[in-house]
Amino acid sequence: SMANAPLKNILEIIYSTGFYKHKSKYIKACASNLIEEHKGVVPEDRDALIKLPGVGRKTANVVLSAAFGWQTIVVDTHVLRISNRLGLTENKDPVKIEHDLMAIIPEHKWNDFSLQLIYFGREICDARKPLCKECPLHGLCPSLIT
Image (cartoon, rainbow, N blue to C red; front, side):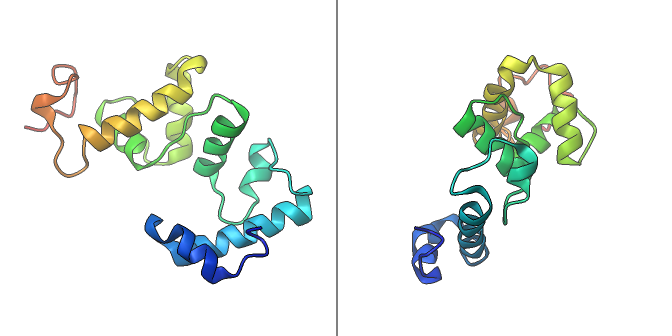
């Protein structure tokens, strides 16, 4: 239905997400591509997902995790920031960070670990005003900001 929906309708549905003008075009193009190239079935393959309009590695990993039960490390802005602050990686490139974290986190915990860092980044370790004094990792953090 998204492939055939007027762009205006998609814009209205996703308006609150931000960047809705670009996202709506990608959603429509992605839906069309899924129908034309994949017979309407979301592929269970990272490379195939990344080839879809508007889908990058982060989104592909989310889909593989949420829809297919794969264990993946999703590197968003929070995971990038916190993994650096905690000294788990020195990289800034999300793919390199993903591989660094995969090397030190047991595979069966990848999904949970990503989500935990995301929520931790939203609630405690904010980009601009981290709550270091309230942080449960206060004594362990090499990037302690006072």
